[in-house]
Image 1 (tube, one colour):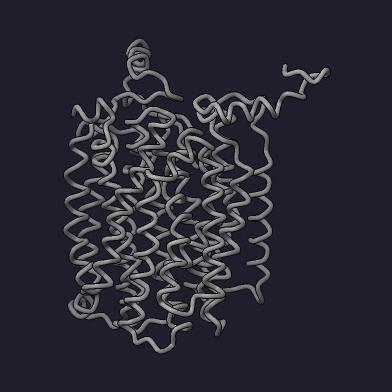
Image 2 (image 1 turned 90 degrees about the vertical axis):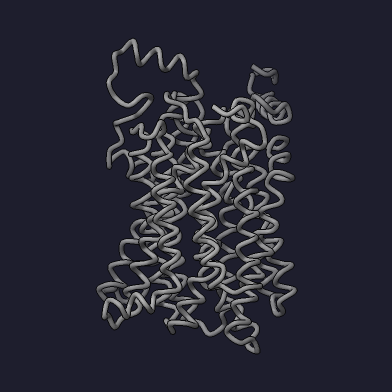
Length: 516
């Protein structure tokens, strides 16, 4: 074990963040270049682009859940997560290399339809990213103790990853998307293949912050021949029950995929309305379920479902922006040529990610330590919704757009850092991979709504400002939902301010007004 890991120094947190940075950079390249390539180089329609982007959520459903379960139960190359990070990184770099060469691949295979090749490459790229993304996030929880150290791990993850995300959009804006793609090929390969071998993973994973040596002794006493600290009881029924707040998104996603691929659809929008009603009902049910009087395991499962419910709608707003922002820019600034649209989109995302790279360690972590992670995250989403709403009314020039996207970046910084720390405190340590994969469903299932429903709306409505209206409403809904999520217990015990608030809330619980 490196000395920096023993001391949990800042340099170790930076090293630990590099594999996640590789996957984040691959995703940034995809966001910056894919829609632009498909629109201006290959001439695809918005609905076709939405179909290509739908491969990401599908890959996430398959990749992150399955890889999460497997990585909890294997021990390869002296680690659980290492082998998946390396394999996913190598595949992701190869698929990035294929992106600007879709036409060449099509010609060499003698095929007519460019859409099929684009879907295939996008699917493999997304699957590769998802194979690695779960382990890169799970390993942070594996090697950091519960509480502030883990919050620091995820805020550092976002700071390092966000810094390179800023670099990606800068390269795309200044040197063009093709240069960005080839730069990404090299960075993704080295950041995913080398750093994992310098992080020592714990051989034994406990349930809720248990000592590794104690778990090792318990397993040895039981003469357990299974993988050390693993959990082997994940079933399809358990998975389906765990994601109950997301059933509405799942129902819609299946319908939308069948509808797009087969041409079969219900008349009108009755099925979409039904799925929306189911979604809102199940999310409300999860948010208002009480954790009081439950064991830590039961309360953790309820808390996990609350996190799923609160987190989901924010990703409709985020993913819709990433996929269709070029259409909004083209509509509001019709004087721009194709390359100029790409440049404005890249500089907008540069501004977004610049803020997201700076504030997690400098602002979000201190605020989370003082006020709690949940309150900090919910407040950041409020700011994000205000930023989106301001773009609706004022986003008519590039510089105004860049400034307002910086405001939106406050929420984006929080979305990809604090929820991981919150979620990791809700579930058992030895099921981190499984639940990290299930948590990712609160990202990918709403993304299917962005790929299909939002895409249909943006294509059908002439005024593309409707995109930012959707973003504003969904993020605002998510912010309200997060205010209903309970702070993790370690926040209460570590933070005197929150503990005092809890005591004050309970002062009148006795018959004579005294705390009991």
